[in-house]
Amino acid sequence: MNGSFLDPAPRLADRRFDALVVGASAGGVQAMLELFATLPASYRLPVVVVLHLPEERHSRLAEVFQARVALRVKEAEDKETLSPGVLYFAAPGYHLSIEQDHSFSFSREEPFHFSRPSIDFLFESAADVYGEALAGLLLTGANDDGAAGLAWIKRRGGLTLVQDPADAQVPTMPQAALARHRPDFILPLRAMPSVLAQLDAAPC
Amino acid sequence: MPDRDIEIELRLLIEAIYLKYSYDFRDYSGASLKRRVLHALTQFDCKTISALQERVIHEPQAFMQLLQYLTIPVSEMFRDPSYFLALRQQVIPVLRTYPSLKIWIAGCSTGEEVYSMAILLKEEGLLDRSILYATDINPHSLEKARQGIFSLDNIRGYTENYQKAGGRQSLSDYYIAAYDGALFDKALRERMTFADHSLATDSVFAETHLISCRNVLIYFNKKLQNRAFGLFHESLCHRGFLGLGSKESLDFSNYAQRFEAVQRQERIFRKL
Image 1 (spheres, rainbow over the protein chains, first blue to last red):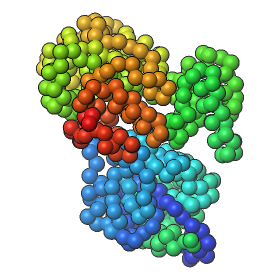
Image 2 (image 1 turned 45 degrees about the horizontal axis):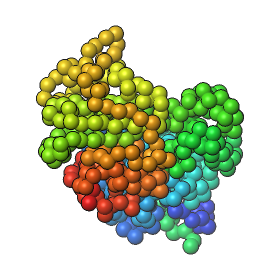
Image 3 (image 1 turned 60 degrees about the vertical axis):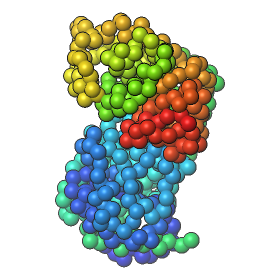
Image 4 (image 1 turned 90 degrees about the vertical axis):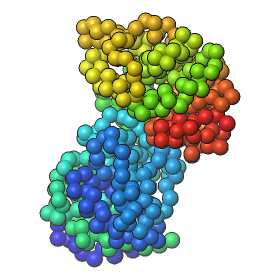
């Protein structure tokens, strides 16, 4: 895993990214609050997050994050077009996908990996739309959701980042991802802000 | 399978289904449709979508089977109880002023919602002057809906929903338990008309006072969603009501200005 800590600049300098998708479960709120607080209000990429929560609960995630994050934060809505520089959370109880016209779509298929929303569903649909221009990040979590989706992002030419299991509050999710594919970066949380910043510094 | 091939095969399959069976999935949301077709591949033991297409074209039975994967027959009685409570408190008082009522449950799936609506109307004393149209594209679901038998395993949850929805009696007053099923009262069913109707290809069939269409439009793209809203707008009487799923809205459609919110939180709207 050592090579992953090299200066990422040479690999990212020539690439343009148009969206960042993020998945987490247990320990995810804390990790994401820490991470997203570092993003400037001028951040260009839409950031779309699936965080596993108990199904029918009305989600206060957007409010909690808005108080601590410079980006605009909201719950994603069905048929809404993604806007740059907005942090979207998936609504509880529905799977969240991204369509070819860069809008969100919801669905009520069965829970996947016991989860609805499923990280895999978001990641796979986003990879189909953005291809090489997508970055995917998988953080701390207690199940296997997201591992297949992240591998799919990589296969479609996107950039993949996994939280170092040793750094994760719950390592299961990052470990499952590493068992599936070799990501571009394996990083502790504290090293992620500089990479996320570089995603935004891409050529026009 | 190379990714590009999947996109091509998927389009061909959807086109084949339309040409052969007149079921139109061409304007369904792509991501969910693709997942469901890929899921069906394993169930049909087909290696490629093309192989599935061959079976679907030549075996009508295979198509009926596939249809069960393409539609998502998940429903429950009094789902989102606060929606039914809002109907009871804010819509029923207006409906009460009409001498007769027509109510359309669009995309009724296996019927849980239409029975819920009938119970609500009965308790409000309106069932005798109501007709409930329950429509869906899936004939298996419609047949189940017609039977009005729901699994006893689910009844406990439904009973809880019913109470939260402002139920005035006991849900068990409306069904007879037999074997592992709950058979709902015939008197409820007498006011229901079940019909095969597609929001993608069919037109308006009646003037209605209330349309409830929940968790159906999420599977449509914007174009098809607009078509459906157009049908609803046309079907609804002056100031008629439209109820949507808890995460559905008119905001991203061409009809945002043609309805007003009665209860935004519960997604209940009124024709302007």
